[in-house]
Length: 597
Ligand code: GLY
Image 1 (cartoon, rainbow, N blue to C red):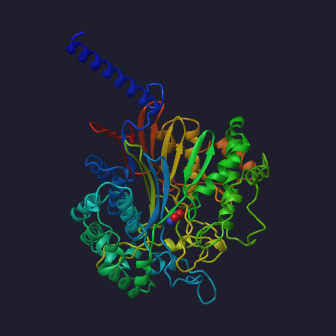
Image 2 (image 1 turned 90 degrees about the vertical axis):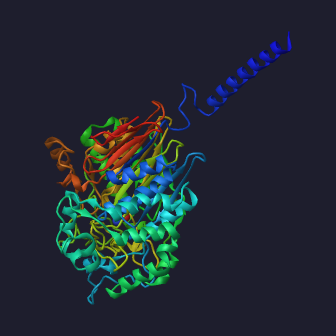
Image 3 (image 1 turned 90 degrees about the horizontal axis):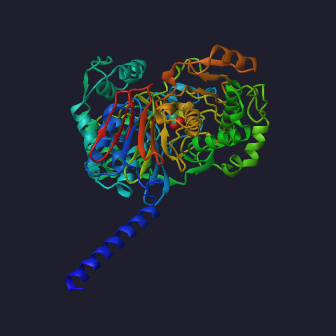
C-alpha cells in the first residue's frame, strides 16, 4: 500500500470512528431518533401581554438565555401591566438549570416593614379596617422584584441588566397604548389612584381614566429602571431612590424606613417536589401555600381513583380535597423563617390517605373545623369588591438549552395600593392584605388565616402564587396563573388536565372550579358544569356559585413535548396575553394565543 493509500485508509477509519463515537454520544445524551432529546428543539414564551412576550423574544434573539428573557418579560410587564405587577411588588421565580438538571425557587416576596405590628389594621375597638391593608402606603410591603431582577442577572442570566432592561425602559419612555382591560381596572381603582397625586399623574389623564389607545408614557419609571440597569439592586434599595421611596411613603402615613430597603434579601429555597400519576411536580414552597396545597390535593386524589368515577363523583372528590387543603393552609401555613410549619406531616402519604378516607363518597363535608373559631365569616367583607382575578401576573419560558422559568409576580389588588412615592414612578403593592390582619377574619380574597400568618416585623406574608413544573418521560410543562386564592386550584385543574394528555391550549382553556374551605361554596365558571351536574352536586350538599370567567385567572403555559420533539405554548383565552415559540431561524406566532413548533 502506498503512503497516500495508507493515509486515505487512516482518514476513512478515523471518520468512521468519529461517526460511531458521535452516534454513541448522541445515544448516551438521549438524542437518538428513538429516545427523547436532551434539549428542546425550540424556545418558547407565554406571558400576559404581547409587548412583554416580545421583550423576551428580543433577549433570546440577542443571545440571552431563559433567565435573560425572564428579566426582560418581568420588567416589561411592570410597565404595560401596572395593575398586575411591578417594581413596587414581589413574586416567586421557579427556575430550572438545563445543564445541571436542578430546580431553584427564588423567593422575592414582599416582607412586612420592621415597624409593622400585628394589630396595625385594627381600630380602637379591635375591629379590622380592611381599607388600611388595601389602599395607600400603609398597605405596602417591602418590594422584592428589583432584587430578583438583580439576582437573576448576577447568578443565572448571560447578559447585563443594561441589555435585559432595555425593552422595558423603551416601553416606559416611549409609551404603550391603553386597552380596555387597563381602563376597566383603572376605573375600578379610580378613587384610590386619585388620592395619590403621583399615581394620578402616572396612570390617569387629568384625573380621569385615559381613553382606549391613549399612549401612556412613564418617564419616572424609565429613570428608575435605568438606575437598576446601571447599579443593580443598589439602584433601588439604597441611595437617592431609596430615600425618595421612604420619604414619599412616610409623608403619606406609611412606616417604611431606609433600613427596611437596605435589609431586603432574596431567599433561594428548595422547591416542593412530589410525584403524581407518573409526573414529577415541582412547585412553590412556603411562604407560598401553592406547593403544599398541590401536594396535599393530588396526594388525596391519588387515593380516590378518579379514573373510576363519573364527572359528578370526580368533581365532588376534587372539591373535598380542595376544602381540606385550604383548611390546613389556614391553620398551619405562614413565613417558614418565622413560624414552625409541619411540612413533612402535612404532605405525608399516611396523613393524606387519612384525609382522603374522611371524604364521604356522596355527601359534602361542612367547613366547620373544631380547630378554628365557630364564628368564622362566610365570605368577603361586604364593602370590598371581589378581585377580577387577573391582577398578579404569570409568565412561562423555556429556552433551547432546556433552561426554564415559571414566574408569578404581584402587587396584589389591581393597581396595588394605588400609591406612587413622588419622583419614583414606582407603584406600591398592597400585599400586606395577604397577612391574616386579624386571625380568623377573611382578607380581600375571602381567605381566612390563622396565627401562622399573623403580621410581624420583617415577616413574609403567605401567598397563593404557584409557579409550577411538571415533568415526565413524555415532556416538561411550565405553568402558572394569577387569580388570588384561586391560583392553587387553577394549577390543580391544569395538572389534572395535563395528566390526561392534551396540549397547553387544552390546559389553559379547561373550565375551572374552586373551593377554599371558607366561604363554603364551589365557585365555578358558568360553563364548568351542566344543569344536571349542578343539581347533582347541590343534592350532595354543595353550594355552587357561577362567577365571571375573568375572575378565573390568566394562565400561561409552555410544553416541551419530548416524545413528539416539539415545543408548544399557550396563553389563556380569558386574558390578552401572547404565546410564542421561537427557533433560531423561525418565529411562530398565531392569533389564537397558542403556538407550536
Ligand atoms: N397577592 C396574591 C398572592 O400572593 O397570593
